[in-house]
Image (tube, rainbow, N blue to C red; front, side):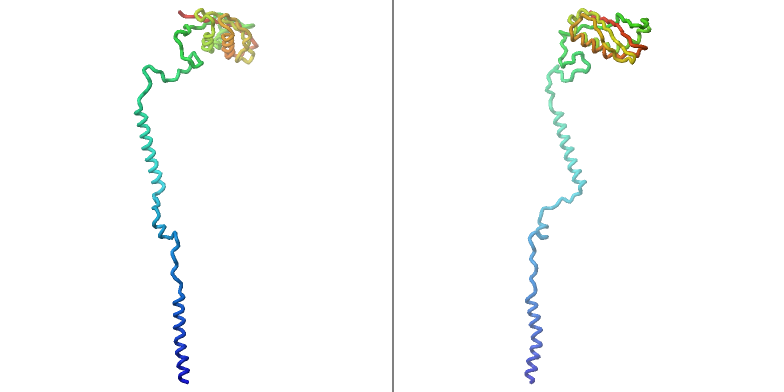
Length: 219
Protein backbone atom coordinates (compact mmCIF):
# COMPACT_ATOMS: atom_id res chain seq x y z
CA UNK A 1 0.00 0.00 0.00
CA UNK A 2 2.77 2.43 0.84
CA UNK A 3 4.58 1.58 -2.36
CA UNK A 4 1.47 2.30 -4.46
CA UNK A 5 0.99 5.69 -2.81
CA UNK A 6 4.67 6.44 -3.27
CA UNK A 7 4.46 5.67 -7.01
CA UNK A 8 1.38 7.90 -7.43
CA UNK A 9 3.12 10.73 -5.59
CA UNK A 10 6.09 10.54 -7.94
CA UNK A 11 3.73 10.65 -10.94
CA UNK A 12 2.08 13.75 -9.58
CA UNK A 13 5.44 15.44 -9.24
CA UNK A 14 6.81 14.32 -12.61
CA UNK A 15 3.74 15.28 -14.72
CA UNK A 16 4.03 19.08 -14.24
CA UNK A 17 7.72 18.90 -15.06
CA UNK A 18 6.98 17.06 -18.30
CA UNK A 19 4.38 19.67 -19.29
CA UNK A 20 6.77 22.55 -18.65
CA UNK A 21 9.45 20.83 -20.72
CA UNK A 22 7.01 20.36 -23.61
CA UNK A 23 5.98 24.03 -23.58
CA UNK A 24 9.59 25.11 -23.59
CA UNK A 25 10.33 22.92 -26.60
CA UNK A 26 7.25 24.15 -28.50
CA UNK A 27 7.96 27.93 -28.14
CA UNK A 28 8.03 29.74 -31.57
CA UNK A 29 11.26 30.82 -33.22
CA UNK A 30 12.00 34.52 -33.50
CA UNK A 31 10.51 36.10 -36.68
CA UNK A 32 12.89 36.61 -39.58
CA UNK A 33 13.42 40.08 -40.88
CA UNK A 34 11.71 40.41 -44.30
CA UNK A 35 13.61 41.84 -47.22
CA UNK A 36 13.32 45.61 -47.66
CA UNK A 37 13.19 46.20 -43.87
CA UNK A 38 14.42 49.19 -41.89
CA UNK A 39 18.04 48.08 -42.36
CA UNK A 40 17.69 48.47 -46.13
CA UNK A 41 16.00 51.83 -45.66
CA UNK A 42 18.91 53.12 -43.61
CA UNK A 43 21.38 52.02 -46.29
CA UNK A 44 19.54 53.85 -49.17
CA UNK A 45 20.65 57.17 -50.65
CA UNK A 46 20.13 60.22 -48.42
CA UNK A 47 17.06 62.34 -49.18
CA UNK A 48 17.43 66.08 -49.75
CA UNK A 49 15.52 67.47 -46.79
CA UNK A 50 16.17 71.14 -47.60
CA UNK A 51 13.10 73.39 -47.57
CA UNK A 52 11.44 74.13 -50.92
CA UNK A 53 12.36 77.81 -50.59
CA UNK A 54 16.06 76.98 -50.30
CA UNK A 55 15.94 74.79 -53.42
CA UNK A 56 14.12 77.51 -55.37
CA UNK A 57 16.66 80.12 -54.27
CA UNK A 58 19.50 77.92 -55.45
CA UNK A 59 17.86 77.47 -58.87
CA UNK A 60 17.29 81.24 -59.20
CA UNK A 61 20.95 81.95 -58.41
CA UNK A 62 22.06 79.44 -61.03
CA UNK A 63 19.73 81.01 -63.64
CA UNK A 64 21.08 84.50 -62.86
CA UNK A 65 24.64 83.33 -63.37
CA UNK A 66 23.64 81.80 -66.73
CA UNK A 67 21.91 85.01 -67.89
CA UNK A 68 24.90 87.17 -66.92
CA UNK A 69 27.25 84.89 -68.82
CA UNK A 70 25.08 84.97 -71.95
CA UNK A 71 24.83 88.77 -71.87
CA UNK A 72 28.59 89.11 -71.50
CA UNK A 73 29.21 86.85 -74.52
CA UNK A 74 26.76 88.85 -76.65
CA UNK A 75 28.50 92.12 -75.74
CA UNK A 76 31.87 90.68 -76.71
CA UNK A 77 30.73 89.84 -80.27
CA UNK A 78 32.35 92.25 -82.76
CA UNK A 79 30.32 94.49 -85.10
CA UNK A 80 30.50 92.85 -88.54
CA UNK A 81 28.72 95.63 -90.45
CA UNK A 82 30.90 97.32 -93.00
CA UNK A 83 31.65 101.04 -93.18
CA UNK A 84 28.76 103.09 -94.46
CA UNK A 85 26.35 100.17 -94.34
CA UNK A 86 22.76 101.16 -93.51
CA UNK A 87 21.10 98.78 -91.06
CA UNK A 88 18.11 100.84 -89.91
CA UNK A 89 14.59 100.62 -91.33
CA UNK A 90 13.42 103.28 -93.81
CA UNK A 91 11.74 106.26 -92.19
CA UNK A 92 7.93 106.07 -92.18
CA UNK A 93 5.98 108.42 -94.42
CA UNK A 94 8.49 108.29 -97.30
CA UNK A 95 7.38 109.19 -100.78
CA UNK A 96 8.13 105.76 -102.23
CA UNK A 97 5.79 103.19 -100.70
CA UNK A 98 6.73 100.01 -102.59
CA UNK A 99 9.85 99.12 -100.56
CA UNK A 100 12.43 100.49 -103.03
CA UNK A 101 15.26 102.73 -101.91
CA UNK A 102 15.14 106.31 -103.24
CA UNK A 103 17.10 106.86 -106.48
CA UNK A 104 18.59 110.40 -106.65
CA UNK A 105 18.92 110.15 -110.46
CA UNK A 106 15.17 109.65 -110.82
CA UNK A 107 13.98 111.96 -108.08
CA UNK A 108 11.01 114.28 -108.60
CA UNK A 109 11.49 118.05 -108.73
CA UNK A 110 10.36 120.24 -105.86
CA UNK A 111 6.67 120.92 -106.44
CA UNK A 112 3.81 122.74 -104.75
CA UNK A 113 0.08 123.25 -105.33
CA UNK A 114 -2.05 126.38 -105.38
CA UNK A 115 -5.71 127.21 -105.93
CA UNK A 116 -6.52 128.80 -109.30
CA UNK A 117 -10.30 128.63 -109.39
CA UNK A 118 -13.49 127.65 -107.53
CA UNK A 119 -17.14 128.07 -108.36
CA UNK A 120 -19.96 127.22 -105.92
CA UNK A 121 -23.07 126.25 -107.86
CA UNK A 122 -26.13 128.21 -106.75
CA UNK A 123 -24.28 129.91 -103.88
CA UNK A 124 -22.47 133.17 -103.27
CA UNK A 125 -18.94 133.08 -104.68
CA UNK A 126 -17.31 135.65 -102.44
CA UNK A 127 -13.97 134.97 -100.81
CA UNK A 128 -15.64 134.48 -97.43
CA UNK A 129 -18.09 131.95 -98.89
CA UNK A 130 -15.29 129.96 -100.55
CA UNK A 131 -12.93 129.96 -97.55
CA UNK A 132 -14.34 126.87 -95.66
CA UNK A 133 -14.45 124.85 -98.89
CA UNK A 134 -10.86 125.73 -99.79
CA UNK A 135 -9.70 124.90 -96.28
CA UNK A 136 -11.29 121.45 -96.54
CA UNK A 137 -9.44 120.77 -99.81
CA UNK A 138 -6.12 121.89 -98.30
CA UNK A 139 -6.39 119.03 -95.78
CA UNK A 140 -5.58 116.64 -98.66
CA UNK A 141 -2.65 118.65 -100.05
CA UNK A 142 -0.03 116.01 -99.20
CA UNK A 143 -2.08 113.32 -100.90
CA UNK A 144 -2.45 115.49 -104.01
CA UNK A 145 1.33 116.04 -104.08
CA UNK A 146 1.94 112.29 -104.00
CA UNK A 147 -0.24 111.89 -107.09
CA UNK A 148 2.32 113.91 -109.05
CA UNK A 149 4.62 110.90 -109.36
CA UNK A 150 2.19 109.53 -111.97
CA UNK A 151 2.46 112.50 -114.37
CA UNK A 152 3.97 111.99 -117.81
CA UNK A 153 6.29 115.03 -117.83
CA UNK A 154 7.16 115.85 -114.20
CA UNK A 155 9.36 118.87 -115.11
CA UNK A 156 6.53 120.78 -116.75
CA UNK A 157 3.83 121.17 -114.08
CA UNK A 158 0.20 121.66 -115.04
CA UNK A 159 -3.41 122.05 -113.89
CA UNK A 160 -6.13 119.71 -112.63
CA UNK A 161 -9.86 120.41 -112.47
CA UNK A 162 -12.69 118.46 -110.78
CA UNK A 163 -16.45 118.69 -110.28
CA UNK A 164 -17.54 117.66 -106.77
CA UNK A 165 -21.09 116.98 -105.59
CA UNK A 166 -21.74 117.60 -101.88
CA UNK A 167 -25.04 116.56 -100.26
CA UNK A 168 -26.83 118.30 -97.41
CA UNK A 169 -25.03 116.11 -94.88
CA UNK A 170 -21.61 117.36 -95.97
CA UNK A 171 -18.63 115.03 -95.61
CA UNK A 172 -17.00 113.20 -98.52
CA UNK A 173 -18.13 114.32 -101.99
CA UNK A 174 -18.88 112.46 -105.20
CA UNK A 175 -16.16 113.11 -107.80
CA UNK A 176 -18.26 113.48 -110.93
CA UNK A 177 -15.63 114.65 -113.39
CA UNK A 178 -11.91 115.31 -113.70
CA UNK A 179 -10.11 117.59 -116.18
CA UNK A 180 -6.38 117.07 -116.65
CA UNK A 181 -3.69 116.31 -119.25
CA UNK A 182 -0.84 115.53 -116.89
CA UNK A 183 -1.02 111.74 -116.74
CA UNK A 184 -2.85 108.57 -117.60
CA UNK A 185 -5.37 106.42 -115.72
CA UNK A 186 -3.10 106.00 -112.67
CA UNK A 187 -2.84 109.76 -112.16
CA UNK A 188 -6.56 110.26 -112.75
CA UNK A 189 -7.46 107.55 -110.22
CA UNK A 190 -5.10 109.03 -107.62
CA UNK A 191 -6.68 112.48 -108.08
CA UNK A 192 -10.18 111.04 -107.66
CA UNK A 193 -9.20 109.23 -104.45
CA UNK A 194 -7.58 112.37 -103.01
CA UNK A 195 -10.59 114.62 -103.65
CA UNK A 196 -12.98 111.86 -102.60
CA UNK A 197 -11.33 111.83 -99.15
CA UNK A 198 -12.07 115.53 -98.48
CA UNK A 199 -14.65 116.22 -95.76
CA UNK A 200 -16.69 119.30 -96.58
CA UNK A 201 -19.01 121.23 -94.26
CA UNK A 202 -22.74 120.66 -94.64
CA UNK A 203 -24.33 123.09 -97.13
CA UNK A 204 -27.87 124.46 -96.89
CA UNK A 205 -28.78 122.43 -99.98
CA UNK A 206 -26.88 120.05 -102.30
CA UNK A 207 -24.12 121.83 -104.16
CA UNK A 208 -21.74 121.19 -107.06
CA UNK A 209 -18.26 122.65 -106.67
CA UNK A 210 -16.07 123.22 -109.71
CA UNK A 211 -12.46 123.47 -108.54
CA UNK A 212 -9.04 123.77 -110.19
CA UNK A 213 -5.48 123.67 -108.86
CA UNK A 214 -2.05 124.01 -110.39
CA UNK A 215 1.14 122.04 -109.80
CA UNK A 216 4.09 124.45 -109.80
CA UNK A 217 7.61 123.13 -110.42
CA UNK A 218 10.35 125.03 -108.60
CA UNK A 219 13.66 125.39 -110.39
